[in-house]
Image (cartoon, rainbow, N blue to C red; front, side, top):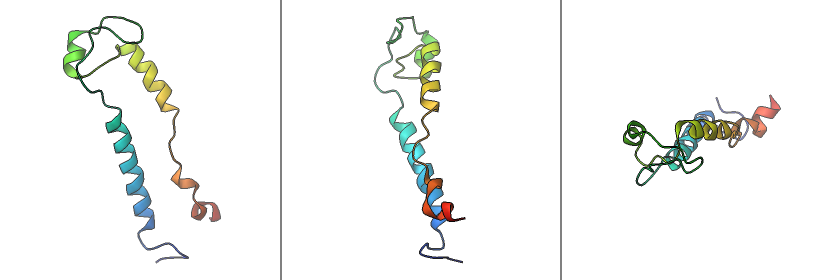
Length: 88
């Protein structure tokens, strides 16, 4: 049952849009090109197994963990902050 100006599948559209945005962001962050021998942040040697497992890798494991922790604080666009959710 639709209420107000929202159509029947508005919630599903928001969910799908949020998932599509997350997938696009994740794909854009994938490494590209040839893997580096040494970490571009700290200069540590990147093991052959890591270079083989992740083509285009640019950071060692330690620097990658720090980078992932920094990105985890980014929340992106909050679709739950819409007018409809504030009225409930």
